[in-house]
Length: 565
Ligand SMILES: *Cc1c(COP(=O)(O)O)cnc(C)c1O
Image 1 (cartoon, rainbow, N blue to C red):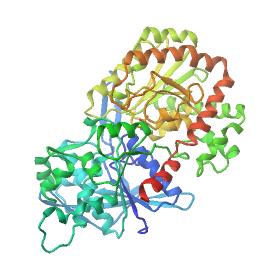
Image 2 (cartoon, rainbow, N blue to C red; image 1 turned 60 degrees about the vertical axis):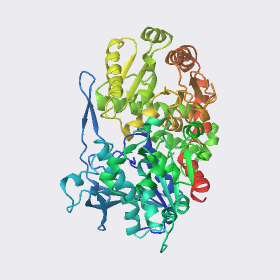
Image 3 (cartoon, rainbow, N blue to C red; image 1 turned 45 degrees about the vertical axis):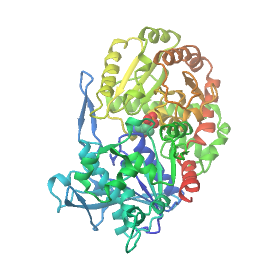
Image 4 (tube, rainbow, N blue to C red; image 1 turned 180 degrees about the vertical axis):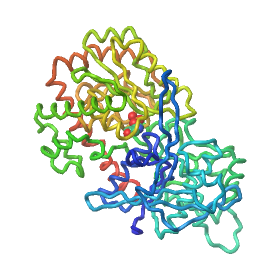
C-alpha cells in the first residue's frame, strides 16, 4: 500500500477501460484520465469510487430504435484484489459492512496510483444492502443516497483504516460531498463544556482539507435529497441544524454542501467557471479546464507518427506544439489508417460497410436532450441538398440513462431518419458506446461534431480526443471549445459567439442554419478540393489543441492551484 499518498480523489464513476465498466460518460472518463496522469506524473494520490458490479448497462437497440438495457456482469477479481479490511457505516439503522477492491494504475514512468472500489456485497450484509454498490446511477433517490453515503462516508473511513493520512480530499462532482460530514465528525473540537454547540464543529479545518470540482452548469442537475430521507438513511450523524446550515434549509443539496465545506472550488472550463459563479453567488469559483490523457486517446497510427517526429510526447504533451514538423503525406497516411481501422470496426460490430473516400462526420457521447444529437436533422431537405456538394456520412453512438425518455427518443428519431434519407446520406448508429469504440471514432472520422445547447456543456472532452488524432472539431462555442477554437485555423464554430455568462440558451434554428452553411460552403469543399489546407487544420488540431487540452497540464494545475493551497 502506498500510504505515502496525501491526496484522495473521490468519484462516483471512473472509466479506465472497457474491461472495467464502472462509468457512464464524460465524468467517469475524466476521472480515469486524471488518475492516469497522476500516475505518470508521480503525484501522491489515491482514489475512491464504487465497484458497480452490474456496471452502468449494456445498450442494445431493437429494430424500432428502442434502447434496451442489460446489466453487465463483470468480475473485479480479474483486474484487482479484494482487501481483507472491512469498515462499517450505519444505514437505516443497520450496520452495513464495506470492503474495498484495490486496482493499481501503473505508469511506464514508474508512478502508481491506487484506486479503492468500495463494495457492500459482503456476507455480513442483508441482501438489500449487498446491492448498494451494484448499479451505477440505478434505482431511486433512496438508493442513490445510500450509494453516496458509502462513497463519501465509507470512503473516508476506508482510507483511514488502510492507514492513509490524507491532506486533501478532492470531490469530483457533488456525489461524494457527504465525506465532508465524516471529516466534521473526525475533526470535532475536543472541548469539555461548550457554551455554543457550533463551536465544536471545526468548519475551517474541514474546508482546508477539501477541494470541489463542479461539473453541472444548471441548478436542476444537482443531487438533492429530502431531509426526511436523509434522516431515515443516515440518522442524525451531525445535528440537523448544522446540516441545514451547510447543505440547504429545505433539502440536502450535495453541491451546496461541497461548496460550503471546500476551500478551493472550480469549474471545468473558463466559461463554466463564470456560469457557476452566476449560479452560486458569494462563492469564489475558479476554473481549471479539463484535458484528456494523451497516450490513452491517441490511436495506433498516430502514436507511431508521434514517436517518429515528436519524441517524448506521451509524458510531455506540450511537445505537440511542434506538430508542424510532421510531413503532410505521413500525416494523411496515418489518418487513412485510422479511418480504415474504424471502417473495419464498424463492419465487425454492425455489419455495415462504409467507404473510405467519403467525408465522414462523427458524433458520440451520452444521449441526453441538451446534447442535441439531432440538430443536424433540423432541415432534412437542406441536408440532402448539401450532399450534392460532396458526399458525406455520419456515424452516431451513445447511451441514454434508462430514465431519460427524451434522450431515448432522440436515439429512436435518428434511427428512423437514417432509413428515410439512406439513399442520400448514410447514417449509422453504433450501439453500446464505450471507451474502445470512442477511440475508434474520435480517430477514424474526418470531423468531430458537437452541438450542445449553450451553456450546458460544462467542458466536453471528446473533441480534445479527436484533436489528438488530427481530427477536426466542428462545434457549438461552449465549454472547452470556446478556449480551443480559432475559426478556420483550429476548426469551425457553429452558431453565435457566447458573450454573456447568463444562462440564455441558443436558438436551434440559428445554430442549424450556421451548421448547414459551413458544411456546404466551407467544410465539404475544402475536404474534397483543398487537401493541403485541410491537413494544415489537422496539424493545428494537434499543435494548438492537443498540446494544451491534455490531463497532464490539467493535473499540474490541480497540484499547484488546488492541492498545494
Ligand atoms: C470521452 C467520452 C465521453 C465524453 O464525451 P463528451 O463529448 O465530452 O460528452 C463519453 N463517453 C465515452 C465512452 C467517452 O470516451
